Amino acid sequence: MNTSIRRVLIGVVVFASSARAWTSGQESVPEGLSAPDWSSIRAAYEANRHVAVAQQAYLKSSNTDAGDNFGFSVAVSGDTLVIGAPFEDSSATGVNGDQSDNSASDSGAAYVFVRDAGGVWSQQTYLKASNTGAGDVFGYPAVAVSGDTVVIGAPGEDSNATGVNGDQNNNSANGSGAAYVFIRSGTTWSQQAYLKASNTGTSDSFGDAVAIAGDTIVVWASGEDSSATGVNGNQADNSASNSGAVYVFVRSAGAWSQQVYLKASNTDSGDRFGYALAVSGDTLVVGAPGEDSNASGLNGNQNDNSASGSGAAYVFIRDAGGVWSQQAYVKASNTGTSDSFGASVAMSGDTLVVGARNEDSNAMGIDGDQNDNSAEDSGAAYVFDRSGTTWSQEAYLKASNTGAGDQFGISAAMSDGRVVVGAWWEDSNATGIGGDQADNNAADSGAAYGFVRDAGGVWSQQAYLKASNTGANDYFGFSVGVSGDTVVVGAWQEDSNATGVNGNQADNSASLAGAAYVITGVTADLLGDMNCDGNIDVLDINPFILALSDPVAYEAQYPNCDINNGDTNDDGNVDVLDINPFVALLAGG
Image: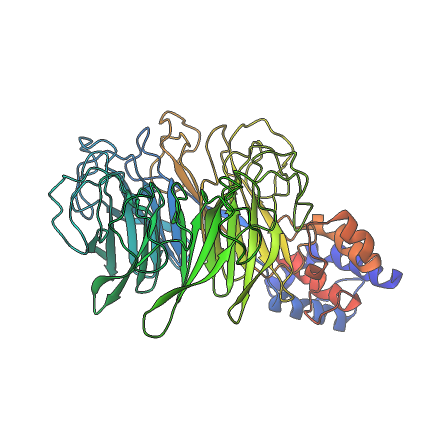
């Protein structure tokens, strides 16, 4: 092993001076390496070039104004990003209207940004409701995007219409809520549909959450009151106040229609069924953070309501005939009163993540001790996996710097083997990627955490994310989105007066204007990142050597990391054969 470590050190010494040489076409073999070794390092470099986690863009609205709360909601799909500003005030309607007439207070707006082949972001369009009204809060608290389709909720909208494309002008149902569907053709956006509940009611707040996958849209009505249970129950019995309901719409040949009306299998007042939504293919997950049962795990007893506000999640599936049914009733493995399990949900394929923003354990990292409840409202997230039709818990996630009141799990997003979790009240004064988590001098500045799963199903934290202009009370992490290796994080109380992309972050003259941050490189390919900070750099050298020489000591010193990050040649072992690829990754990182 001493020889192996010596080779690592030789490679590390030479890579810095040699990387430029080989990338600029010089072919000389560095002193201290044989020609075959040098050839191996070069080949590994080309095969395993790694892009480190980094902030790509700082986004502001084109009409930044104090109190707009830009970044309250975010969503990303490929190279398209949508950001909501629910307290924007213009009276414009439709697409690219007049942004400067602020006569419709808190009407709300949404902004679409696109990324070009060079990684440069620009605003593509400015979206308003077709029936803009003061207090409609278009873009609160959710937006969603799938390809060329965007859906935006406006839970404060007041029309008495029902179904699809009804009368928008009869405002006799105060706070009934609506959702709006926009589509893109080329670079041009237009509104395709105006969605209302099938049982529109005053104060139902339809549009309080939205989700989309392809031709399926899901909308929550937070104030819906029916006592129905299950699928397509009686919508008219309003004896379960604020129980909540979910509506599924489908598109065929450009026309939208409501497919189903969903309620929990154990509907109860105040459960807020639908608070968080995620849809992937023919599977839908619904969070209900106000649910009260004392059950834990999968499909437990729903009727023991002795754990008030513990929360639950419900999985529904759709068959080939378009018929929906409930597949699972999901609870935390450590159900606790007021944990708010279901405050956030995210899904990709057969994997589900559920946030519990008020969970209290003092654990840190992956699968820690769930029973030490000394960090009140620190928050947690839970990963579940489906095999066939059976769900089981796969991981229990906590922040790497768990702190009371941080509310880790307020938001969650998932793409393939990546999960991003927000903690909007985290307090560190760090900026950027992998900063100092221990300096809690920026109260409620907020943070986000990137987790990845390796091929063996093992989860590890890859990145600790902060704003590039961290400020107290900015609430970075209140909203998160992820698509591939691109993450977007909203900070709706950020105060800068900048507009557009990568403006001046230092002028804090627009209180609560809000901002969003695009971060790239959050990828399931963690090879070489031995200290789990999201970067491949010299700080990974000592942990890599430790992993080679003493795996037990490595796992003790880096409990939140995966030693398999050192398997840089992907042969299933961390050994001397990983040295040259590691050096190559270091050179490329």
